[in-house]
Image (tube, rainbow, N blue to C red):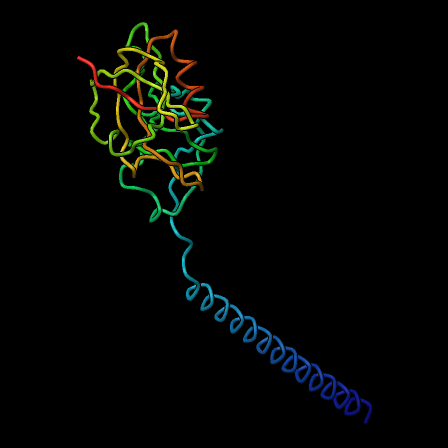
Length: 220
């Protein structure tokens, strides 16, 4: 009797242990199945999410820069732009440094091969300073070509027909196209021209261009 009772107790315990083991295995299987389902959903969402657009580093102006300024490394910084927004001819820094801006640029404005002229352009005009001026008559400015010699005159804003000579024998460096002239949020009148003027005349020409109307007279 005693041995039979012990066997019965052992059978009950073994049965209980087996049932508990099956319950735990079932619980773990359900947990693993839930985790697998969650992982599948996460992978599906990841696959459905559009990939981040590829970016390209481009050079922009680090600060506001004046037209005619010769670029140095400190004048430039890089920003990452979507590849689709970058022009096909975005230049590396080495092709910008040492060249002169054809027009003023704002800090953060992207620079292209059309933003600059000549490497160390001022060196090609010894004894002269290269300055940007905005001529009042855009039609007359469109007739200018690089190498033309002109006298620069300032008109009287009162419109009385008088004027004063600012610089003799200035040389046209370039006449940027309208597409080359950076947008500033304003609508400036006239047309931008880059001139090489005598060093003694540079300040007067620049100052007159800030507050008056400039014109040119072709010379031989």
